Image (cartoon, rainbow, N blue to C red; front, side, top):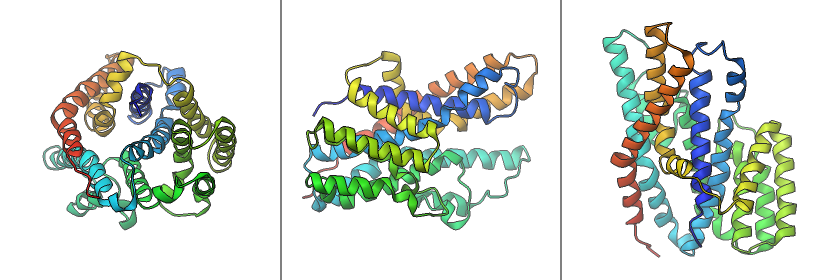
Amino acid sequence: MNHLKVIDCLRGIAALSVCIFHFVLGHGDYLNAYPTLKSVSGFGWLGVEMFFVISGFVIPYSMAKYDYNFGKFWFFLKKRIFRIEPPYLISVLVAFLLLWFSSIFLNKQDSDFSFTQLVLHVGYLNPFFGYRWIEEFYWTLGVEFQFYLFMGLFYTLMFRNKKSFFLFLLLICIFPLIKDNYKTFLSYSTFFCFGFIAKAYFLKNINKVEAGLCTLVVFSACLYFFKVEQAIAGLGTLATILFLTNVASKPLLFLGNVSFSLYLTHDIFGGRVINYLNKSSHQINPIFILCVGILFSIGVAYVFYRLVELPSIKLAKNVKVTS
């Protein structure tokens, strides 16, 4: 089972899409003179759905590499925690400190700014206790963590045989029928199903016809539960994984490598740069402000990747199989 470079490219596209979405539509009206740019950038939030599809493929695909069974649950969970949690928690702490600095030295107040709010991030518990995320996009990491728990518990049953796979796929893709008041894995499970199909097809658990029928079912569920553009984003990501497997681009591969760091830090740093430039002078071209924000965010993401994420990756790789 080889590493698929197209996955890194997709990660880069997804992270950059979310970044541009936040920078264009989340920082005032400085780009009102560019309605086309705002309209196109408005689809950038679909990068989140792309990430969910990618995770639905990558996580079970990697679990198959070491012949996962339930006895390896803690091994699997430790690998995911060591890989994801240090960069995530450090970004949370940095965001919190910047908010604290603003409240103390710049007299900027935030009604949900509290130590309790900070601590609840450790277990992705903020919405369950009525607290906002320090950075709103952290909710997606909560969904991802819930997905890891689900995979650890049910991977063996789901991929035991074809019948089991088809049954689980059907159940998981209609989880959104279970209404909840929070953004959880139950709410977005359908998108992960696209990734499951890719994993099952690549490892020859299902054939082309079966993969096509499964895709039709999952796509139909997406159309029922979500917006058309979300369903298309999910289907498009699956199609790219299946049919453009060997496609790679050096700029996208670079963005893919730093995509998690970019996702974690873009609004914390790049968003503040955009706000500062936008408020400091009305003579600065808005497109220039946007470009500076994007490039600055990518630069910070690279530094964060080298100093924080890369050691976390190495730490996760050193986790030994316990069963």
